[in-house]
Length: 85
Image 1 (spheres, rainbow, N blue to C red):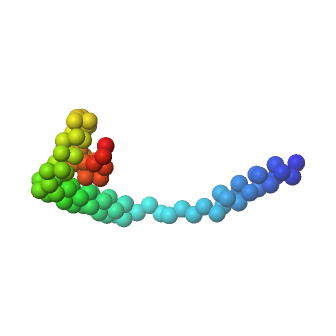
Image 2 (image 1 turned 135 degrees about the vertical axis):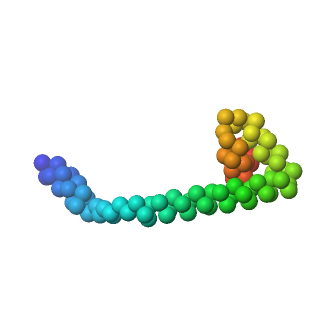
Image 3 (image 1 turned 90 degrees about the horizontal axis):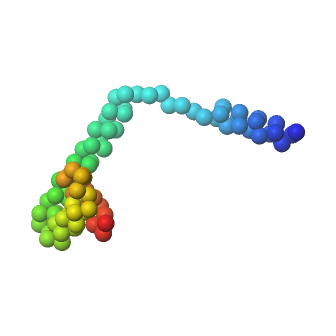
């Protein structure tokens, strides 16, 4: 019987240890804005590299042939990050 008491008591202690951060919509919006800006910068860089390098453009075409329902932007990012796919 002690084992069951230990299980339930320890789970209650773990619940008490949880700390919750207050939700701040401005912080969340700023974080998402920064993530979006980083993604667009990566997209711009990848596009410039793809235009200048025929190997990267070939990688893009290979990705495009497999992911035909994806947007051009997503295919460029996939080709940039995982060209072997």
